[in-house]
Structures are given as structure tokens and as C-alpha cells.
Image (cartoon, rainbow, N blue to C red; front, side, top):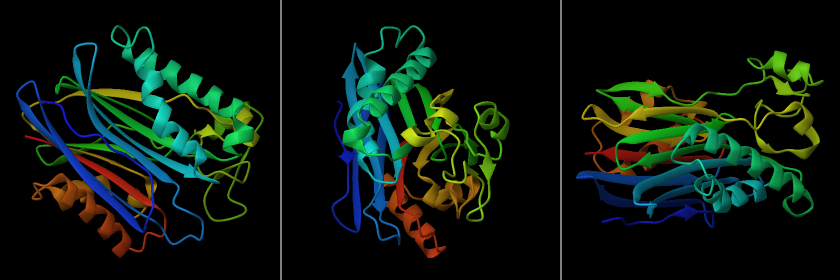
Length: 277
């Protein structure tokens, strides 16, 4: 029985929720928690966590969207990115190609709507769980997906940092600088090398996602998706270890966000934990 839908925005200092389903005999539960950071601007993180049936396939859809220079692009992604992915004609024959095309087309639509959505942008990490067995993760930016197998943390996403993609940025006519500030930034402005939106920087930015897949087997314990507000203060293995004995995924997501705050993370933090029985 498929259940639970969550497309979380933000209305208060924190937001939390959970859901569960049984897919192909496997009990799968998810929980999420969001906490606003210390900045004066409104919360810029959004997430999706839902189960649904599409073309006779039972899907778990999970995503974190971390906006910058406003929340409108992240909110747009929350409403449209999975729809665009699932509407690609080759979604089941070549899912990697379908995801890359959907990311690109979604980015083009965001740029076309710049007058409405503003000059900001968003990173993204998405995870599609197919029939409880195959997991496909895609990301642009520094929101991250980490899976735990036998207690070992495995990062499925790629942190798209300006310092590691300097050559690609420079080939497009851009530059990477630590001034102003203390971290490498594209054209001295953006601390990620790939993102949706960001019209003023788009000539030097990529929106092509990294795509990876994995099989959910008996050794698979959990999946963590979180924005960089968590990963700035916590390693992959630390995150996995912190929740290994927490059965309730909602409690696990809340524990991770609260621990990040305790470690002085000042950024918005959003976290989804999926537990596999």
C-alpha cells in the first residue's frame, strides 16, 4: 500500500514529518526535518518526500532543494522537477538520460521565468526508488545523498565545488576566486559550480547533474539526503553513525539537524532519512 506525500515548504522555525509504505514486500519508512538557519532572510530550503505509483512502478521520490538569493527557484523545483523527470519518454529505458534531459529542460524553464522567479538559484539532490529495489540519485551543487550499508557510509552524489571545477568554469569564460570571503566562488559570487537558475552567472555555470544508481539489498540500512548546512559540520560516516540505532526515520532526521545546529551550523538545514527494513 503506497501512502504519504510531503512537499515541504516553510512556515515556522522548523518543520517535520514522516511516511511509510510497503513496496515489493519491503517496509520502507521516511522522515524529514527542516530548521531555519541564523540568516535574516527567509528559509530557502524545500524538500519532496512521497510514494506514488507511476506506469505500474512503485516509486519513492525524495529531494532536497537548497535555494540561494531567494527561495522561489527552490519552490519551483519542488513543484516541477519530478514531474518533468517522469514525463521524459525514455524514463524507463534510459533513466540517466531522462534525468539529465529533465534537469536541463527545467533549468531552461527557470531561466525563461527569471522575471517571475528572480535572479536566484538552487542546488538539488534527487533520489528515485524504483519498486523498492533500485535507487537512482542525481544532484547539482552541494546537497548530498549518502547511503549506509552494513554501517559503512557511501556517498552517491558529487559535491560540485568551484575549486574542483575551475577548469570547466574558466573554459566558459568565468573565474574562481576566494575574494570576497574565504571559500572559492564562481566569479567571486557563488560557492557551487553547478546550480539551477542564477541567470547572471549561467554562462559560467552547469546544470548537468551527476547521476548514480545503487541496489537496495539486505545490507542496506538507510539513505540520508541533506542540504550543505548539515554536511558543513558533519562527515558522511558521522551522520550514518549518529542514526544507526534510531529506528524512527523522523526522529533520525530531527537528530541529525539538531546535532548540526549544536555544532554551530548557521545555514538552513533540511534532511530526509529513509529506513529500509
